[in-house]
Length: 199
Length: 199
DNA sequence: TTGACAACTTACCATATGGTAAGTAGATCG
DNA sequence: CGATCTACTTACCATATGGTAAGTTGTCAA
Image 1 (cartoon, each protein chain N blue to C red):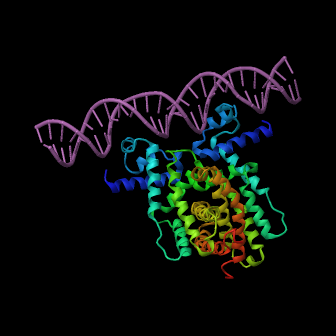
Image 2: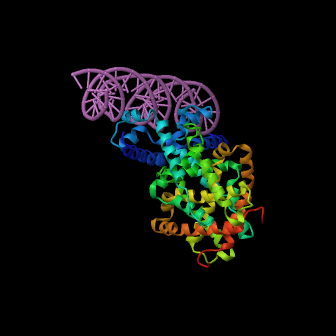
Image 3: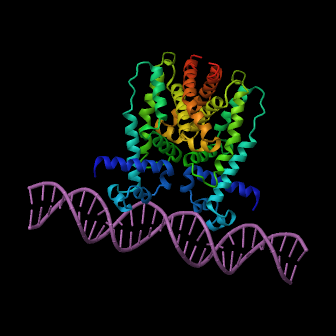
């Protein structure tokens, strides 16, 4: 199977898992979307779990390769976080799949979704500790901050359909535009406040 | 059917929907957990969707009755937000169910999960605009802030199993303890920074 | 030319799922 | 006493689901 065909297949699978979740996305539906039969899909990936594992693995690899080589630690953190929200490169689907993974918490495919998270989170934590007035922050403090920011971004990332439904498309567009600006302000405010230990 | 039996039933249903999602939680499984047969459950709630709708409705009602009559707008906002995270009164299950609802975004049970959110979000937005230096903030600005804080809280709320898996139980306990403190700091920092318009 | 391999297809299958139809035991009420 | 209602149970059922087994077709290298 060609490498780019495989990529395309995983793209569609990821989209479907993002949309309907592990249980909601049947292999027949995924195969159908690619003009394959269910059995052809099963031929390539032995089982649904394996396919799902493949999707998670790819997300994890994508994260690992998105390292920032920025100069200023503050802007490095900012750009890193803001980039998570961008719809390019299937970022939105990844967010949704991972959020579902958080919710399910079942040891699925041997927690393939969580092992990768560790280096990612540690990396982010270290980025915070690279900021001058956060150098004395404990791991836990820096992590708590980072996780709150992650939550702010990812929660908003999955909310578009609902917020559009509630407030209408025009208002949502306004919110969507204001969001990154407000987020940057939030990050700035949190950073200059410094960690608790030095409060 | 007795009112408290009904409550108990919905408690269990909510827990199962929180754990496995709409597709993952079969009516047979829910019924089983209550010592009922699948058909007995179906007798009470005509269909799975209707049962799910009932669960969402109850969550919505629970939210509406949790109004804050605090004095200081800042501490009112803080206590409101922090209370969302408390595991009491099935708060954690509600969070998970609603997060899944955000993810699925399907018009399920006529978007029963989202209509309630509007007053809730508007209430929170107004709480921000009640804060002295946020009085001139636009609706969108105040909303963006509130939604970021909501995201920070709820994202953490669903992450316990995963974070425990990654960092171990002891480290998680540390994080869990530090989280509300750091969150309060984040709220304070964001509030004193003020809205963008007056920046 | 042949043999191996990949990429399927056709044909099944056990189980689970949501749901219906019809009947039954017990309480309540006129 | 009989009627009605609630809370079920038993008996089904169509469909979907994940998965297996065996055969088929095309490619390509030895």
